[in-house]
Image (cartoon, helix red, strand yellow):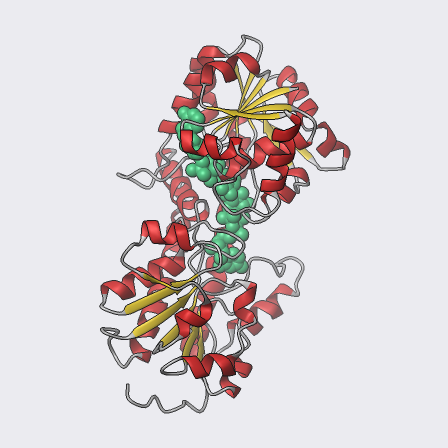
Length: 438
Ligand SMILES: NC(=O)c1ccc[n+]([C@@H]2O[C@H](COP(=O)([O-])OP(=O)(O)OC[C@H]3O[C@@H](n4cnc5c(N)ncnc54)[C@H](O)[C@@H]3O)[C@@H](O)[C@H]2O)c1
Ligand SMILES: O=c1ccn([C@@H]2O[C@H](COP(=O)(O)OP(=O)(O)O[C@H]3O[C@H](CO)[C@@H](O)[C@H](O)[C@H]3O)[C@@H](O)[C@H]2O)c(=O)[nH]1
């Protein structure tokens, strides 16, 4: 089939490449000429394992092309997937639908009468119905559940496909688009517009709630002297609870969970329904960042002014160079504002971090970041940080103080190497090492 993908960011570039992999002819469209030039040259402007290979493969076969021209795309596609951003509005918690409205309008203007416009962006419930009533072309909604870092895998082999459709015709078209995925056994949920839109925001709200639940337990463990890692493991043995998404730490960030729960609570208010608990989920999440800042102050003897702090991690999660609402950079920037001399290292996200936070210091390796540090904060759990040898690390720093903000390091190993090791939601060491000179 001939498909277009409007918006070639994280979601759209992945969707376009994966649709070509399924055998379709695909045109990716973006308003950003630099992004399109990079994609045409087979370069992906963000880190996503497996995606550059797929884009090069299908730009070479000619099955995948990129353009900035909506007119060309409108004329080409039988099905148009809209994948533009829905960031948080500047003036409220709600989603900014400017890009979605503009993209739908631009493609509808040039699309064939019998084409299908499919929204994939995450939107407030009611958006599909509103667009369907104004565009004069058939609309469907097909929310996306991919995780950054696993985007290709999640698109080609998703847990489920969800489609919001108004006609058997639209369902038939989408079944044809996803035929190889469906033949591989992926469940398809067919729903009306509001349900399809709500499935997406409900899924992200649930995931965020799970993380904040375990982080609230971490707060209790800190107050009562428990260990949230053991607690999470123990409750996770119950299949009804499950082990996943119970990693306590500095909390969730990224371009999705934080803005999506805010937009969801905001939309619920508009509909006269309270999702106030999501505001608490948000508040718990933000308190974890505060906690790391407080711990840093405490470990630096009351104030971080002049302290040299090494921050391991800048991306909002490992295997990503995405720094949108990154807990690591939020903490780093706050400590810098408090007068600390902060040096950040991340294996993939340094370029993005530098652009967004030019006043922070950056190192090209973990070793360089650690050299001379008074305090180390581990805030994004890249696998290579687990490989750091605590003894070697101790020989580099000025003082062996570390906070594990992701519960991912082996505390016993670090303590045995002479470090004062603190982790969120875990008891402080029984025998506190004297913090000389602080
Ligand atoms: N990133 C994810 O992992 C993910 C997963 C599932 C759903 N989503 C949702 O998908 C949507 C897109 O997210 P993203 O992370 O890919 O955002 P992004 O900012 O990386 O990409 C959006 C792209 O749309 C382009 N754009 C804006 N207006 C346009 C227009 N009129 N025509 C063509 N292109 C236009 C922008 O230039 C940008 O390249 C959001 O609603 C998000 O919530 C994202
Ligand atoms: O137990 C956990 C799991 C995750 N996180 C954090 O939560 C955030 C989000 O992680 P993850 O969900 O893996 O990343 P995203 O790529 O943002 O994916 C989420 O957001 C996407 C966009 O809507 C959805 O498509 C995905 O299904 C949903 O998982 C990151 O900061 C993680 O560090 C934790 O703190 N503890």
